[in-house]
Length: 149
Image (tube, rainbow, N blue to C red; front, side, top):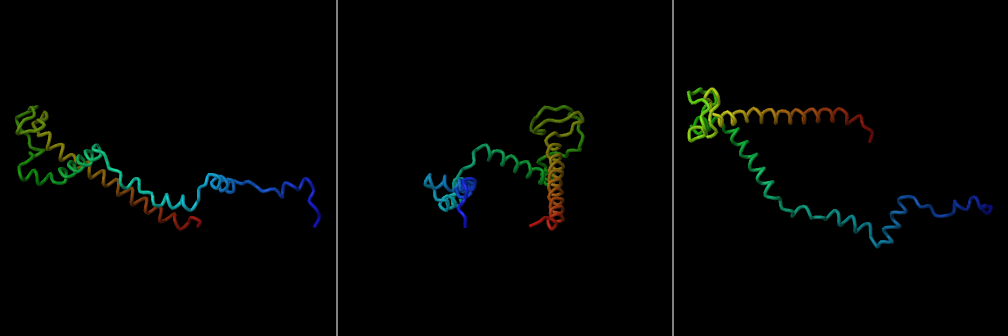
């Protein structure tokens, strides 16, 4: 085999691609790659982290609104809230013991209207979530087999 010329001497020099440079840098810093991978796998910093009071206030509010909306017919039959469609002579009544949030221009109880309106909003919200989830599952199951592996 002939001796390499000076132009070919660059072929004999070690190449520094990104992978080799990263390994060299890690070795210079004294890091062992296997130990670093184990540390990230066993990282439990987020498991013990406690959630703030604001989070629990929001969760409690969502649970309360959902429970009231789901139990609205029972609350109405037990007499806790008024019939949202019943008209009364107490138009624009101020909040009080009979009407906790007052009445509107037709004398309908505002609290019961809010609770029954929440039923519609929750139905639309959950229906849109399930519709989107169903369409996403269908599209991904149709496209998935066509993707290269």
